[in-house]
Image (cartoon, rainbow, N blue to C red; front, side, top):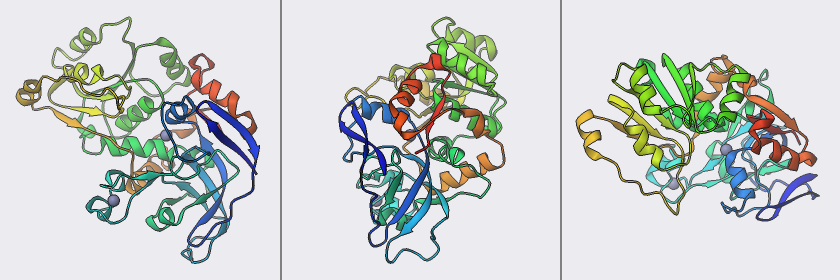
Length: 349
Ligand SMILES: [Zn+2]
Ligand SMILES: [Zn+2]
């Protein structure tokens, strides 16, 4: 089978390797589609370490073989999306199905186990046992299935934010994660959703794709604070979702909030440099709410499935490019170049 093999940071080659055999409790998937993600870009650049040669974690595939002892409900020919996060199964967080907060630190497909940039991949036993195979409805294309993973992360991060009641939500960051967070806010009933970004190119992609946002604001041309004052009668917005890994944006976004407002720190900050002073009195007197976001679990995938299959979120409108596995280098180039008009780039092995 063909696989994109990571040889060293930044060095990836397409190779012919043997199709893996599923061991006891394991499931072999034929990968139908695997989407490129911002994290893959960081791995390829050597900024994030992985312990396997094959990455790719936004996966949809078809069962091609099952190992001995696999639950009889999982059969050859069935189609699944892959839940990335695998917990220890024993800590208090895992016991309540919050493997994304596993106290021993979760492991993940595409990081600790070979991922989806390959014609076939093995789902390890602990993932199968945990329920990481998420059944795809017959009428859901594999391409759309790859969106479940990133969408589920947004659903988890926004879970405790009452978007249904909100008049105005601002998302900082116009990459695919910002877009997905904005679409969730919209789908859950936020009246006005504005996307802020520092450069124009990604905002142009969103405009060109006709995505359902009310405002696309270039923060390097328009003063965001003044814009928010003007557009909210001075009261601030109900929610700011930080979807760009710039640590100053947390404190900045907090100042844009109305009383009782919610700040979602969706994006992770650089691990080496994540400390940013915040005015705690702003939180105290305005009764602000601060939310973290760390991956997702099964319940989030199932909700993502509902959004996509009911059309509340139009997955097709987000997928801009498709490549074969042997065109991997070109796919990465397209993903990294906003002038290509790319939002979600899919590999179809
Ligand atoms: Zn991802
Ligand atoms: Zn655990």
